[in-house]
Every structure is written in structure tokens, then in C-alpha cells.
Length: 334
Picture 1 (spheres, helix red, strand yellow):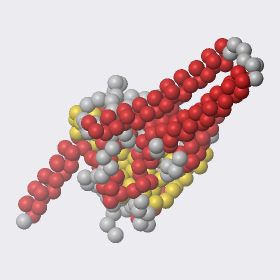
Picture 2 (cartoon, helix red, strand yellow):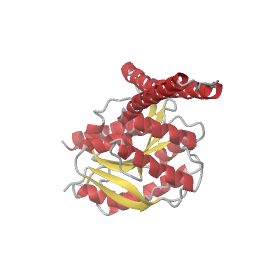
Picture 3 (spheres, helix red, strand yellow):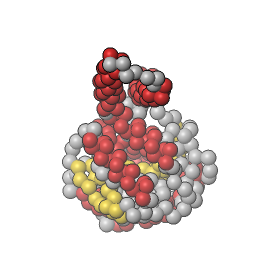
Picture 4 (spheres, helix red, strand yellow):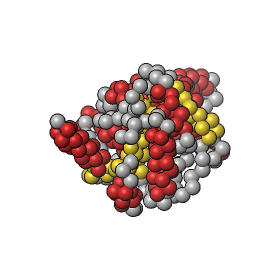
């Protein structure tokens, strides 16, 4: 069996504090895999700079000149974690037999990379890195995450619980993923839809050593809502059901009011009237907001704009240099 070419894709946004440590540790892991003959010597690490405002790209450039395993892509602007990750996956698909995606903060256990590669060699196309514990998360984050997975499961959306974006994908699985053309990306929901042979490996998530989290509460809630609305129309149906329930309640309330008037028991109801108006108005605004969210997603999809633009691509440059060198050597030996 030929040793697979592995590319480790690392999306980065303002990670100058942790990036040198990340580069060193991932390089050590990759060198170990090469020594064990688990991956090809043509394997590499691809850092994707998502429009960072600090020294992230400078660090990537310097390391790529000193370390032959490190390559970099700089996006023209900040397009978000999922889009930056897809940019790296799409670039890596050109020359890799398998690709592992991992965040730059080193909270995911990089020692599991070896297990992922072993599972790939056993014939698995997708290997998910799953957290067996969430002790490093706050009580609020841990319980809201579990609630999110339960809600997604109730809506019929297939997700891998306690899995983020730490995974291995074979070339054919990645090729299938790139056939999905939607602009509203939620990779955690898209990848399980691909099929093929899939398995999990488990690890204990670490605390962030340096830098700050790029997913505060606001982004987490936005990400969760994007995931729900990208894969299910249940929120719109819920609004429809709520409308019917409200209509039924109003019919009952109207019947009650007519009976009270018939028996002469009516009296001024300013409070109940105002509460009803506020409640119905609030429900209408919620319904309009949810429908508007779906219309906004349709608007993005219909325009079909590119989801990212590449400013600097050292990854393809190195591929071209390697191809030219190989061709030169073939000519020299012929």
C-alpha cells in the first residue's frame, strides 16, 4: 500500500500568540508520522490566514521559508471560519490523499492525528474527532452545546455530538463535499450527509493556552442559528403552528367575550386588550424575522458570489515548484 499524502489544514484568525507553538507541535507530529511510514514525505501543513489583523500572516510566511512542511494561503479579507476552512480544503484536495482539519488554538489533541491516519489506512473515508469530555468548557457553554445537539437531533439534522471541525477526510469524500455549492456553510451538518465509511476517535479537549477564543457567545448563537436554518424549515413550520394556535386561542377568547356580553357581565378590559396586542405583535415580528432569515439565505444563494478570494497562495506555488523540479529530473535522466 502506498503511503498517503496528508495535508493538515489550519484556519487562522489573529492567532499570533499561539501560532509558533502550533507550528512546532504540528511539524513534530507530521515528522513522526513520516518516520513511522504512515504518511508520505510529500505531506504538509497548510495554514489559511482568514484576513488576520495581527502578525499571523507574517509568521506563516517566515515559517514557510524555514520549514519545508509549512505552506500558507492568505485570504483577501475576513470571510469567517467555515469559509476559510473550505478554502484550505479546496486547495488541499488538489494533491492530497487525505486531509485533516484542526483549529490553531491547540485545544484539540494533536496526538489523535496518528489514530485518524491509522483509521484512514483501515479504509475509513471520514474520521471525526469527538470530545469525550467537556471539562474545560464553562457550565453555560457545556449545557448550551448539549441542548444544541438535542435540538438539532429533534429537527432531524444529523450531527456528530461533541464534534467541531477536527476531522480527517479522504480525497473522494472531500471531492463529494466540494460538489455542495451552498454559500451558507455549516460543515458539521454537511459532511455527515456525504456518506461513505465513517468512524469516530475520542480525545479530551484541552484549555486554550494563549490568545483568546474567536467564538464569543454572540458568534456561538449566530453559528447555531445558521446551522438550524441551513438544514431545516422547522422554524417556519413552528411559526405556522403557532399562528394556528393563536387563532384558536383568539376564537375561544372571542367566544368568551360574546358570552359575557350576552349575559351582561362585560366591563372595561384595557389591560387584557393591551396584553393581547403586545403578544400578537411580538409573535408577528418573530414570524417575520424567521421568514426574513430564510429569505436572506436565499438571497445569498441566488447571487452565487464567491465565498472567499485568495490574496497570496504559497501553497500552489510550492506545488508548481515541486512539479517543475520533478519534470526537470525526469528530463535529466532520460
